[in-house]
Image (cartoon, one colour):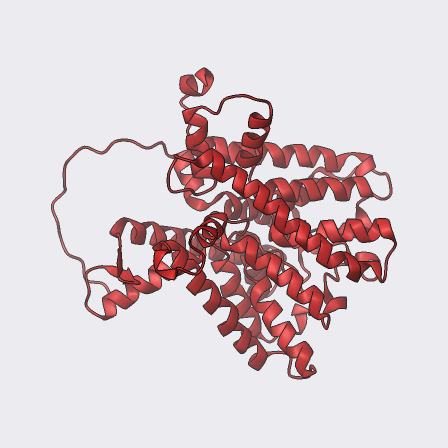
Amino acid sequence: MRITKLLRISSFQIIIGSFLAVILTGTFLLMLPVSSAEGAATPFWDALFTSTSAVCVTGLVVHDTFRYWSLFGQLCILLLIQIGGLGTITLATVVTMLAGRKISLFQRSIMKDAVSADQIGGIVRYTLFILSGTLAVEFLGVITLFPIFFRKYSLSRSILYSVFHSVSAFCNAGFDLMGKDQPFSSLTGYAGSIPVNLTIMTLIVVGGLGFRTWSDIGKNRTHLHKYPLQTKLILTTTAILIFVPAVLFFIIEYQGYPLKERILASLFQSVTTRTAGFNTTDYNNFTDAGKFLSIVLMLIGGSPGSTAGGMKTTTIAVLLLNANGTFRHRDEASAFSRRISDQTVKIAATIFALYLTLFTVSSMIISLVESLPLLTCMFEAASAIGTVGLTLGITPKLGLISRGILIFLMYFGRVGGLTLIYAAVPSRRMRNQRLPLENITVG
């Protein structure tokens, strides 16, 4: 406590530092010979890429998770996914409470920023809700998936597969252990399985809605008028982003599929692009229109305070509502009979600009360095910055520069653009003065 005051470390710096510390620790563990299936030491950059992808719950990999990593390595990846999904600060808080130590006001402030809570009051109870809720949902996922895997695999492997894929799906990570039959195959072998599709999709959606949303649902239940504006926006935007793209994918792709598989594939594609990273079909067979639609969904991502990445559903919702207000000649954005502050609109516009700029520049650099089509590089860059994990198969073939770019994008997408900026640029109290106003013509 005294050290942080002396060094004037902000909560945002602690958040990004804690993620970096876990990534480096994971890198060291994955470099150990015991982590690889062949018993050989893994190169630093391969271990760093895998550790970053796991902690940032992305799912992009340079090696097939089942074939390259040993059981120890797979368990390390699973642990890194769970830590990344819950958040390093959340787990550190739980450990502190289990040790019987008191949570200071400064620690509570860090927790508030880490889990995107609206206030410090009740933050410890909220953190326990996050942990218990996560374990409960993941356990239900394990129970549902186990009978399916047990039909094909041994008892021990079925338990491992159930736990691994339940955690990976809820944390929106996209890592899988399905490489036994074919490397990098993900869930393509279960494209027609209704139980697997519905279970994985449910886990993805639950994890991507955000803990604050589930807290509001548990508290207010069917009394929709009591829901806060943020929860209403998240639920509405999520529903739209699931069903509208599903219809588009149904029309654009999967024409040769039987009706059941076509419906499942369309829904799964709509859900998984929102930062989950699993796939039941081969994206190399997609049309350019289907790939571009996937890119847009990957950039949007999940909701604030969730295990998902991306710009967030609320960011897009606020920008669209602001545009709607402008079209209607209104001074402020509004929704559900509530006004949205100008400050919120500014933050949403800043996040949008940050993501779009990094995504565009990174795609162009990778395309130039690797001599690959721009759309292919855009797909990979969007997958990284949105912490999705979907790929067109180019990640294992990329050079060091391109992998370094993807590592940064994954880290940026997980900790959040504004968190990095607030950590790098210390806040200063602005003097109470206003500069002269002058109009600029736009549009």
